Image (spheres, rainbow, N blue to C red):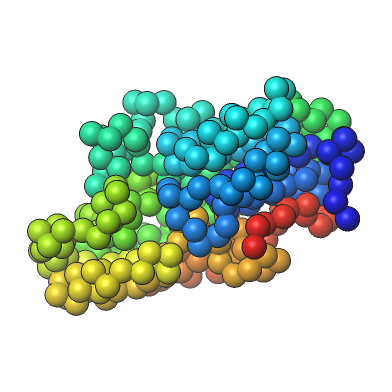
Length: 311
């Protein structure tokens, strides 16, 4: 049954699913959680429906990525939130403008930095810390519970980071290059010694021009990279062409904000998202993902979750 807004349970609204997953891991069974951006939706162009306004009006905490990723959701949150509700923009709090990354999909001329910080586990850990602090401040009676869940999640993310480093060590140095559909790995790549050689999707989400495509084909040929990566969310015939003409394999299984499996599956989590990406990326670049074996992507808290994902 629906809990009423005055039952004392901390009500949290989140946007993209990796953030929903981090919030769910820390809040566990003690929060009422609504994720508002359906999975498999382009978060850059998502516009919340009017019914979302009602959910936001009841929230105590609204957690977004920020860095200009979900502007319509942010506007709706500001317009509808309770006076004492907190809006937490994780990317803005986790980085300073000096640390912002600009690239092909997010050019400096637009002034909007690459918002995909969570694809770097250490930035996701920073997000988790910010989420913990806000929940502790808003819901003191459950503070110890949130802190314990955070500590467990921190151990899991630090383990993930070590395993990813070990996995990429097995990739031949000349293959440690990344060409993706969209610049989704701005801080992931440098962390694990990968060079980002390009992205196919320009900032305005149109298909790239013939000239841009020709340039990418040349890059694939010159670098000899064995594989380039697309995503199920952004199917791109252009990427198939670039791979074919550049002599690389095209793999369309990377994810940046679309969790693997469906709700209730162990991999349907932020940790599962990253685990699956490494299992896709590393073998395609000539390495082995054995370091990921036995990693647990499931929830860190005991008991059932309070998460509701929009279908």
